[in-house]
Image (cartoon, rainbow, N blue to C red; front, top):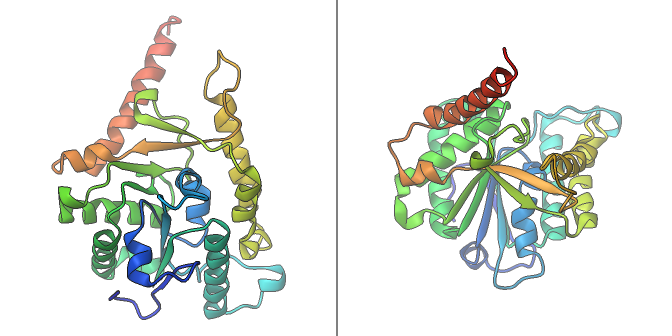
Amino acid sequence: MLLNHSASEVFAPDRTPESQALARTTHLGIGAHPDDLEFMTWHGILECLHRRDRWFSGVTVTDGRGSSRCAVYADFSDDQMARVRRDEQHKAAVIGEYGALVTLGYSSAELRGPARREVGEDLDTLLRATRPRVLYTHSLCDRHASHVAVATLVVAALRRLGPEYHPREFYGCEVWRSLDWLMPEDRVDFDVSAHENLTAALTGVYDSQIAGGKRYDLATSGRRRANATYHDAYAPDQVTLMEHAMDLGPLLRDPSLSMVDFALGMVDRLAVDVRQRLQDFGD
């Protein structure tokens, strides 16, 4: 596969040839950093686990060289850190039985500069090669700039390619902003209760981040558990772990729909709900 960045690679844990590994993809996750896939797309991973008629593949756009580091990683150079994070992502792909893992190798800064065109070209290439039925990327309301940069690039790539390459389902997932605030009509809720031990393994493999002072493993598990409990105020918990996402499908069905207007429409519906609840009590 011809990708733009010299550091890009395609890794198939079961050593299936590259083109076949990508072509068998049914569920595709596209994340900004090493570890984003494991934090936000457990639904897709679970859907394909131990299956041979479904395959989860992941795309990591950046190399993670700018991540914080301390303890044993304190003196690691950026190049060393990028290698460590790539190795951790490979381990996750093996544990999660991914069909393929694609690392594009860009820096976070390149996502916000002229290299966005090259990232977009790579996404075009990958979407043609995988043609997933279900696609996961970041929420448009995420508060991490790199996450929003990736999400907008994915939407733009799908719009360029046209309906022939559109997935049946297209979701924006929560990482650096929870999505429990979305109104029920805007939110998709995924039961991810199964195989909690593997969830722990997939998030725990990122030792460079955990030892670096960020307990993403505990935070991600806690968010999923909180989502399950706070999902319904009037009924016993129906599941133990839940992921939230926004349905990005309308952006494909209506290419003229602005991503800004689409995202702010969800914020506006929340504002209407908050206003109405307060007015109901005399404010």
